[in-house]
Image (tube, rainbow, N blue to C red; front, side, top):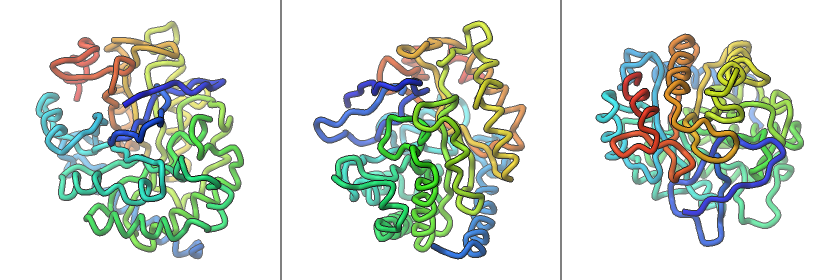
Length: 346
């Protein structure tokens, strides 16, 4: 799999690669209408479903929140091995499919077959548009032009018994490195609502994570302008990597935590909307964009944040990098000090 940095005026925190090999020539950046009353009732049902995941009494990990991981080309067996290494099973498996065509987006059968019947909850990065289909647009999505695709998307997940998965729809939309960036937030919101409403018609228990990138990003300076409304969202997520600035720089962790659109900003936003909070991606960075490198303090700080706000935290997933740019934990770690801190904490 090849990776390339996309130029941004405000660099991204981290990557979000697919789990299957991308078609030749495709590159990813390094770091990386139903009535409101019906939608609201569905949102209440989703909240009840999610409460079962974010409970220490039901979590396989034994943590007060659901704890997950992204691994390149992961399988249930590889997550079992990772959970054994850290000393506690995984609750969440973060995954991606390919995204060149509509079929890639709505029916990544290889992914569904791999995870069918697995004990982990899937957190699936789902693009709002396929990347290699000419003429697709957020504007057309907002009119309902693609609703039949999203109805089929829900049917496909349900058919594999994955109808309670977490859907990270249009993740990091506040950046400018994906074609679904929210450059027109009002139109983007309508697109989100069309997708969620359509998918709910065939998979009512899907969980919808509205997922921003930490800090002020180049695609949309104020992501709250693209909030779709409480009836269309299950959790509020923010991706946070140890960069821009790194935690080991002077004031670095405080900026990550309390800076403009930092972790606390989004935690408070989630609480104001009555939503649980999520950290869908977090991890060490080794290269590019002021990386923190092998910094166990960052791992300890993140764990401390999770502990301090456990009652508001639904789930988190550590990102295990596919190359030298991201920290990888375990026996062959490229960040051994951070790996040890993760193993000790989690």
